[in-house]
Image (cartoon, rainbow, N blue to C red):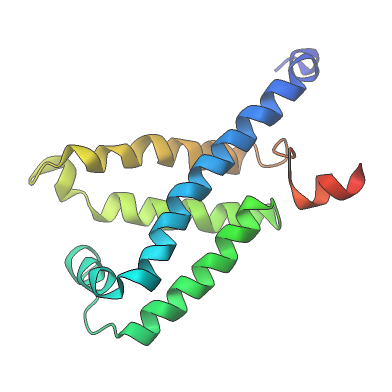
Length: 141
């Protein structure tokens, strides 16, 4: 790719990547909060889609706390290789494990996972260009 095109559009690229990061964070934040506000639903979800039974509320709360730390670091642009990668992995697993909702027991709302998956992949691949409103970039100014 022509580097002059990137430098001419640097501000736009940074803004677009920030908006993707913010959008992914919002969805992940709501999913994470669900672990605290409705852990029974999470237990049913894990049992139904991931075939993981026997989860108890304290484990769901622990998963929620770990996920909250990860997504806050993701929002802040910290440790991008890891946080962006973990967010991509979590969303990929969630997207692919619900395959019946795309094929057999079709539920249109589940199809919204695909554009978000594309956003997660984009953020991971372009993580070095995603600097707007990141913790490291704020301290450089």
